[in-house]
Image 1 (cartoon, rainbow, N blue to C red):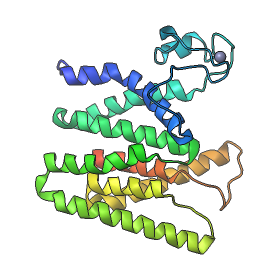
Image 2 (image 1 turned 180 degrees about the vertical axis):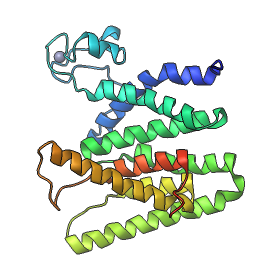
Image 3 (image 1 turned 120 degrees about the horizontal axis):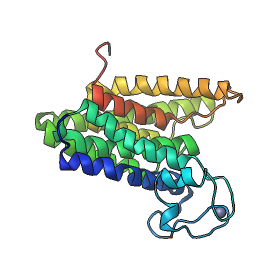
Image 4 (image 1 turned 120 degrees about the vertical axis):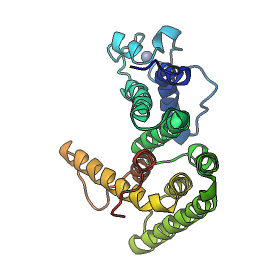
Length: 251
Ligand SMILES: [Zn+2]
């Protein structure tokens, strides 16, 4: 095996810690809480946590998923996000060239936080969706400068299409089914993948949401036409897969 490039090694080592921070973003941004200041505390007993409580995955395993002060169960979303952030790096390493690894991993980490946020809170924070639009256009300028206008128009068209669908849905059903967070995330998808990728992103989004509904059903929860689904999670997964593997040729 080739030796790992320094950037790759750094991404692998940083991933679990980034995952911890992404988890904080996913849990705190929907609640409007500060994500930078404020020490980490046990949400149950409010005891400030020490460094040894914050080692990714390891601390959770050693404490067997419980707070060492009050014995409250620690949300398994923490170790899951820490491992998922590492998974993003390893997955990207398998698919993309070293030259685009960093930008791919950064996209993947942002999408991971958004996916978790929408599953938990049915909410996508502007702080993550909006920067993804210029970031996607910058990536296009760098990798494929001739396509910049096409990607910019795809981003606008994506926003227009989803905003139109959101209005139509509200008109037909009398309630919101699509949020403006979804509109902004789809606009980001247009910026990253261009017009050719948008159909594939939507198709993956539908597949993911159907799988989530099936999983809810299997977990014994009631599923009906009123069940709200995290469309943003589907869009995040769809954008990730389309960025890595390109548009499906049937679309
Ligand atoms: Zn506690």
